[in-house]
Image (cartoon, rainbow, N blue to C red; front, side):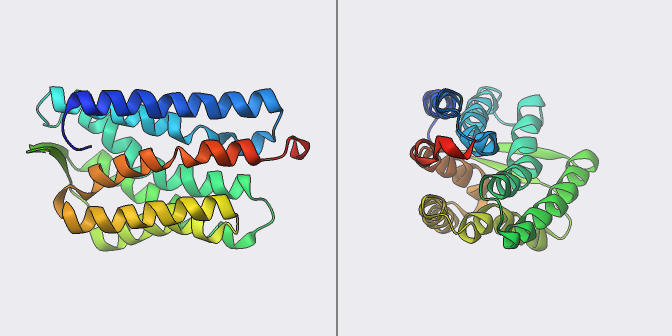
Length: 208
């Protein structure tokens, strides 16, 4: 995220609290368990921001904090998001496409992280991550289709609002911080994911 380790800690704690509230909402309202992965997404993204605070504290590098951050940002998110949407919006077969792309993209990213180094560089008020990815353009396209595309194809009004927000965020992050895109966009998506709390609250308990 931008600015500092302190900003990551504060933002991460706040976003994680939203995730806890979302999961608690599902449990209290006896909402369908199928929405739990999306309800918990802010919890994951909040923890992700707090991990980046450790990257700041270590002045970047290739240490455990950098690797853990990369594991969440790279293979885990393109797997978690489309599968979460697929579970939350049953009956839409089109969602199997981004889910399948997410599985393939995650597999490629797991292989890349297992066989190639990833490093982090402090660049002023941002963190730049430098993964060594083969066929980087194809992997990035698959990543964005799996994460953003699944929200668009969901057919759910609330999830499409989130799609608009994260898509605009992606464009802004590319234009302003091209070499720090992964870090800044993940931070932006984390903040936008608070929209999920309202979405979770709107899921009817009778679907359980």
